[in-house]
Image 1 (cartoon, rainbow, N blue to C red):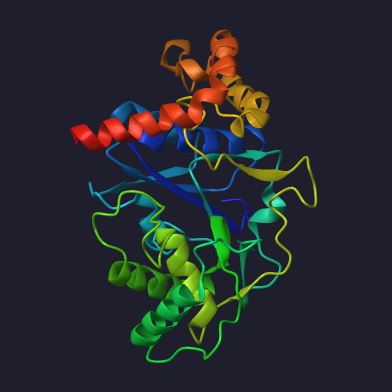
Image 2 (image 1 turned 45 degrees about the vertical axis):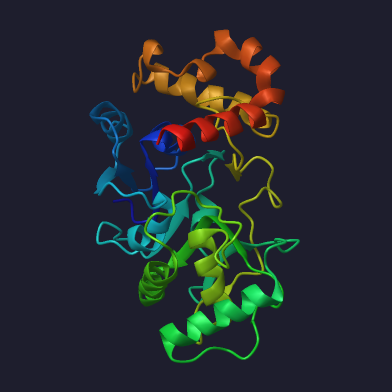
Length: 308
């Protein structure tokens, strides 16, 4: 390994996010980011594992089939033995890197966790929610801060950078996730729970109230606030670009298509293997339909619920 590379990038997804993980790692390689990658794969077809592996310096970690949202595996994967560098970066599999983001993959201070604070705080982060978080942290750790160290806010975690000295904290996050997140929670959004963003809310609870945790950085830079040519672009909303474009994700259409073109040129994928929404010839159709994406996604979810 290059001695200048101090970070491993970790991501994961079920088979529905395999193309997302492929785009994420491909965007790294296309932009000259040679960092090792660990990819958690749940129920992936063999050909997708081969495509991601073909990007080089990638370790595929098989995840057992589970109804629980794959995002709950974040702390386990970030702390797994396959991560051998001083730093680890979690990157959600519904995102790409714009430009060479190597600088953002290493924290400025090993005592800090690089994660973005929510601003404004999510509506479901109420006083009652914070009280539940404080109670649950005390049950896990034997103690909890009397007031949240983050005030009335929490964190947003599609992108995280953490030093290896905090592996015990990752284990704490994993343990608390097992304690408070039901094994049949299939989505990362639960409106009727104090842990309304599953793994993200568990992380937030620990950073708010646990006695010994990394400090949340005041200098989050990966969102383009420092350099609009180098940042982490998170698609965030459904449906994702490899299924259908929506009005939010359309802003990154050119960047995604350039990544697909690069994979075609490098023979990572064949033209016939590319989803229709990622083919240039289909762009006029998907651009015209982007405004319908929220309704299409709701209909898809309803169909799954009826026929599951």
